[in-house]
Image (cartoon, rainbow, N blue to C red; front, side, top):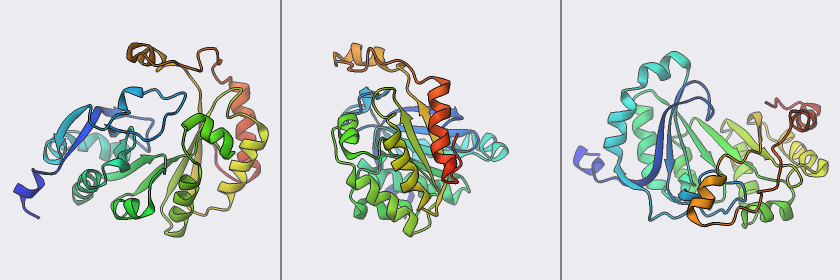
Length: 249
């Protein structure tokens, strides 16, 4: 593949965080891609929704910038994480970023909802070291209420990751009075316990840090009166996972 071809590989991104510490192991270069098929009630990047917005960049431009932070990544056991939005809406773009990073010895992580056709995801996963899979709910009705889409593709994606033994962290946003029913959390724990590739579960307490963006964009924020997830609620949720032998954080 020639350099001239590589320079033509472009995608649309929302933003970049150069020293992220919450999207995978170590210090990470985090790329937020533009475009998302979900409409999560608590989304903190609602300005990522539309794929035609954001900023157009080339893979070459990103790789030049990523290399500036390689020493931090190497020292901390970090790497690059592509999140969004939904990165798998731009598969060719993220394949090329991940491929180039792996050539440089940089650890690659994909943060995804799994709401994608497996045929689209499979070529991307060849260049991914770790998947951060967001499972918003195990109850299909709650999942649809949260995201406005079906749960089934995400569960199919999770099963496929297990089938190919791809290391994964599961992320679950704990929202009081929405995703916190014990039956929902227990169902998710039971599901994950049957997957051999899952290294940990990250319970993300609900917060309203993105609410101001919704207001700026003129969107109605339906969780305005929802409290943040308390430490006690998080601890209770963790117990469900630890009972099934799952590391939960």
